[in-house]
Amino acid sequence: MSTVQSNFRPSAAVFMPFYTGVRGGPDVAAMWLVESLCRDYDVTLVTTRHFDLDFFNRFAGTSLTRGQFRVIEAPSLPLPSGSPMAALQGPLFQRFARRCARDFDVPISAMNVLDLGVPAIHFLADLIWLDLQSAVSEPTSAAGRAQSPLRRIYHGLCRRLYAPSGRDPLREDMVVSSSRWMSAALRNAFGIESPVIHPPVPTTPVAVPWEERRPDFVWLGRIAPIKNLEVAIAIVDGIRKAGFDCKLHVVGKADDKKYGAAMKALAERAGGWTVFEGPLYGERKDRFLAGFRYALHTCWEDNFPITLIESIKSGCLSFGPDTFGSAEILNHEALTFPTVEEAVRKIAGTLPDAGRVAALREHLRARGEEFSADIFRRSVLRVAAKFIEQRAECARQV
Image (cartoon, rainbow, N blue to C red):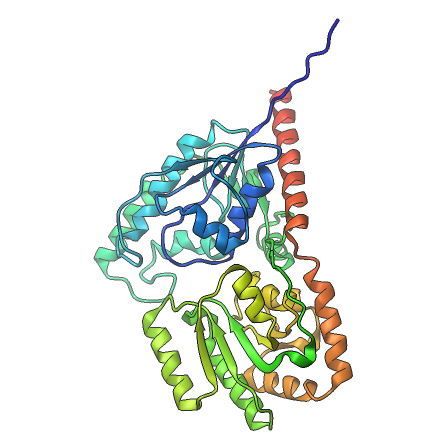
């Protein structure tokens, strides 16, 4: 009796819409989800008409080719970014995704919980989505702005268009957190156990001796109100007043043009020591970051700031808020701060102490090694294998 070798590869679908020009950590994670699964699965990316493989490879540091996976583009409205009608995109994508999901062995939502109507894996980027149901039915939006009656009716319509499947994905599916902070929040609020897989932060470290780096600060990220660039300007201003001759270099794109203009005006009033470098990607960004000694992160409510890890992996002595993902990543009291004043006090007290600086840099070097693409890949494959086993066990019990 001969044994027939099976070449069967399970199918996996990664659901990730790319609606706007705002790019961030979820885009990086989605691309690495696809790359991680391609070796062992037949992978399909279910996305929108805005998907640009060359750009996202460059943005995320992946090296995917068009022959490695399939792309299905969901129908979407031809609306510009920020359009008042953009809320319709969500239910349109979800309805399309639900029709596709049943055809795959491993359906995966790459950005928060998506009601796919079948068992699935959901990778959480943040917890904002938990407030969306109330935000569209209350007289104020998620941002706290008063909504007109017409706007409330519109958002109510959008909510109805989601047409819930009747399943509770949050409790019935496998939900993966991007940080221990997020996992603990889900456990405390809902009694849900959520495994933690840190998003990958692929970089190409550039070895630049400490003595050859500029004694300046670099700030990396989207220039948007939530990122609090004004806090970074205030911190560096305080450090300069404490006697340190340093500049602030801002790397990123202004998603909010009005806010971006306000930050440039603020920097001009403070003095000529804030330099706006624009957005940088890939190896060019890695080389640039490696030219600096220090980095600042100033988003208090960031669940898992990938830009902070990028600065750490580049060899920068990095500082950030003592909350959410920043505190988890930095994991050292000397590197975190609750206020501008405390940041200035800690940083100004640390920089002149060469021994302390060396010890903190070694601490950060070890922290940076925990957020690799290889660790992410192995973790994703373990979760996918466990998901398949669980579905098979459920099928046997039916």
